[in-house]
Length: 595
Image (tube, rainbow, N blue to C red):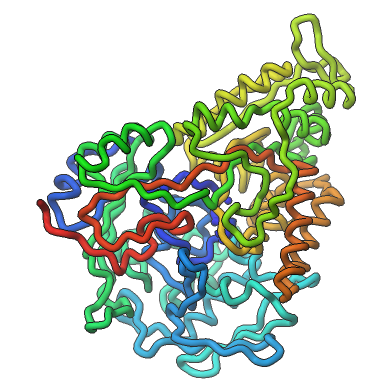
């Protein structure tokens, strides 16, 4: 799940109007702009200018955990998914063939593939990507969990047959396999040495390879665009990859658009101002801006696209990890007792007024969210339990669990401790900050004291993935049609099992971590569902995962908004998708001349 690919990155704060389709497997995959940086407005130069509200965290596709990221532009996998039809189509591989028992799959690469530096892209690169990177336990990657097969968690066996053919052999049938091979293929000639070489701590040098401080011309890619430049807190610029493989029917090399610029803007308000002034070609339309932009649509020569319910999820989650690191509990013991009390989490679910959140923050453009699986997915379970707003029910549950109220209606635990905790969210997202304020008010009505602490997104990701020193967070996960792309969230040792996270590779160990039976059951159901090739049986298994998730509430789900994006009329060929946004088919888009 990109932590919003279900194909897996960690928080979906990208402007939906600009996000690229999930061309790569992203496991469910997180300052003010100087106007001079743009070198004129979007309509004055032959390029597309989009806005993002946080800097990229890495230029290494295998290590990425967050959205926004650059990899939908810079890399491709063996296959890709059409976000409109959900069909799998060829990408670097021109074809594939399954054996009768579905355990052997042979991919044939397109002839003449090249990397952005002109070097040949061959079967060696595919084998290297899977065996040396994705399946390498020394390398922390969200992608790996999506390839674990069966109870044993075995990975496919990958071997080269010849220069263009690669054989994958599975230990047992694995329903999500083909879609999962959309994962980015990486260049063996540029990266193999960094995998084999170890740093002073004995870790592969690859872990620090291709960070955001790397000169862009050193980063070798195979996608539609390559990195041209990156200025921290200002912009990322992409230039068309001269060795990209795809052509149109007339034999013209794609993409048509030569250059793409991401302007890194301070916040959503700044993005709105830039779009209205003509500096941006696209904007994710947040609910508070919808009415204003709708009035300007025709006059300002742009269109607002509605992709239906968003694929992502939004939620709050408590840190259920009972472990300690270096003798210090990850969560203060009294707070850990609260968070690990089911009635406490249920009380929180009943105490949050989602309809008010929809009415006032989302301006009516959304519905209550009750499932970890995207509403648009064929595996979404409509019968999943919801938690209607009921603060009195919340108070009853708390008192049944031993909590009590003092004379000031403040909630105390059985030992007299005032119930207060810190809620973190990403500071750049205005909508999330408004949600946090309402959650504070709603939980205050049942006696809880919530301290809101907005953090820079990269700082927040580090807390969730590495230090694990957090109490409660408000975030989102990207989504998709295939639930198994969220395996890295729901497997008990998954790389994004954040509510009860195991330590990542290369960080100090945790002592005393406990895993609940319901966690194990959900994890096992994900394994079984991936093994099952009968669609109705798969749906039944995923229905049960959704039921358990709502019963035990590791995530308290909030609102499922509409996926809305505004794009200027000068960009031709838009096929807007809730899953892929406006630019999933950027290689086919064209720009009209300035009016």
